[in-house]
Length: 311
Image 1 (cartoon, rainbow, N blue to C red):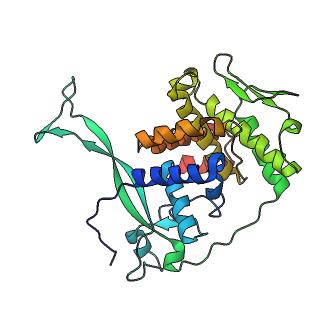
Image 2: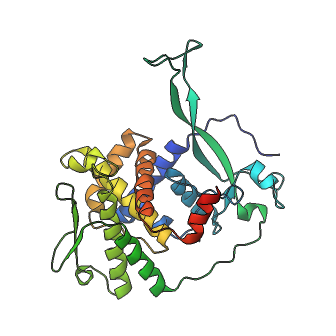
Image 3: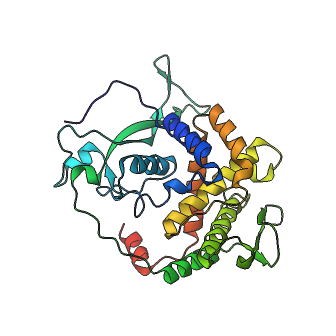
């Protein structure tokens, strides 16, 4: 039987504390210890759904802590439906947040909107997960990607987004201009790195970061923070863009190297996280939406089109 507990868990607060700890220990490179912990994206092998937003970091933390290299996670009931149920006494190693809609009530009576309809609200339910390695599931067979092919896929992904990206030889900074709606980025030769591979990591990581900002334009996801550069709000926008780059790098199979301005916002991120235990989850959620927008710009394969027609 699954281990039960009366203690109320708060994965959002737990994750915030762990993120703060990573920031203090690793500085501007705080995301790097979590990248590449598991081979492939974290997903539920029973439902075939991928974990998103702040849950991605929760699972990265859990994988790092317990030494898991398998990206498959499911609930007790999920594993019970397979040939590898959770062994007796095996405890859950991760707790994720699942959004749910609920009808709102006040003093036992439905809360109504101005049209007389019952109001609904969003809340998060905590769900316990076990990793595939805990239940003895057959190991995944991983296929090593060809580095040249991988980089070609990254180039195609960026080009398919349709952003106005201007490569400026000799530029000393990369930025997105929301007013002019274009991205400026130095040529790859201008990036730091002792090897070509290191320069490519900085280059693509920076492009994906700026594309994260690009999604916030009023004609796209309309994040007001991209226009508010002189307040704490813009630091939150920087966090959103950086997490978008992290998620995109993981999805594309490349190592993420933090953007140069990462360190600039580190202190404000830590202060904001200390004041709001849900901030990281909110930023990760926005970053996931930004990545979804970029992915929606990619051409669909014929088999994907066929699957949509059947559904």
